[in-house]
Image (cartoon, helix red, strand yellow):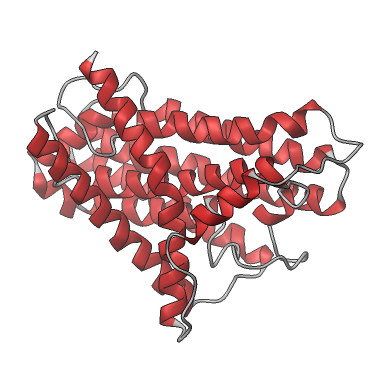
Length: 313
């Protein structure tokens, strides 16, 4: 029972921290660009305001349009409960593994693309088409980049992968480890609509991907979609932080270890969020036909990581 309560606690912590992560990236980008910017906790105000508004639904929308925000938010919460965030005991701690995480992430994206098509909006259809093109290249890359670590751990259980990396710190400097991290970081930018793949701060119809699919949402529905997207970003950064740099994560349920795990988790998120903010202030958005080239390069990096790990065994 204590283990299930621990999973619930770290999941609720992730849900609570997700809007702050997005707000921190926005605030840091503004400071790097010489602007004051909104406070890091501004997304909390936006979500609360959206929950207080009335939802406007197109008369051509079906039940799928209304169910998608709950599916997007629910799958993000489910994935957050399967990923080692603050705790990662050496024994079997979570009920899911790599494949459960990948397919749950894909399920939320699949429903969001269907919702973009459901209203009959040309922008929704355009965004759904682009999103499926991106996902077709990113989801295999996510799986391969983590498989490169699973080969050394002998298991696809994420907690055991973390435990193996902690037991053998030299693995973190191996070529397979570094290549897999680079591949997962590129995929993180693409899956979450960040530059150079997508621009999260624009509504320009000819370039947007994620925003095109959620353009018809408003009120509580939009709040759930945005909250789910923020939680998805946190999950991807947690995978990059704790699978590749697991030091500081709690390996027991002792209060001091859990507190240290929480602090290290927040610090890792802040470092990766700062890297995204710096990158987005230095690069421009790629042309749409160049995006598959970048994602194909990330897939090749993940494949090389698997080959390098397999040959080094």
